[in-house]
Length: 114
Image (cartoon, rainbow, N blue to C red; front, side, top):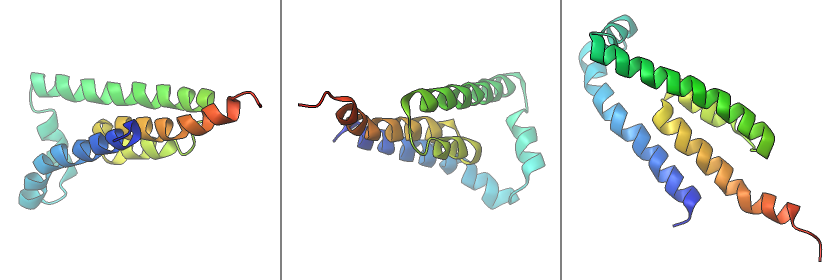
């Protein structure tokens, strides 16, 4: 298994593991965003964890923007969208999969002609 496929596997796990916890909430309460947010920030430890994840997501978005520009990573915005809709656990490995899948092509393009 190459590294890009490994990152895709990690992205899939990053989708399934959190959403397996969200689904019972949705089945019980429907898509009740105010209740969901109140439960995410229900106490000090939960708030700390939620803020940590939100901050890490923001830092990832900023870093991926500049990294994608510097390294000409195509479709990097897909990771931004995944972070907004699905979470950092999907976005980060997705970005790495996109970036590493393009690495051999970039290396060949930058190689000296023989």
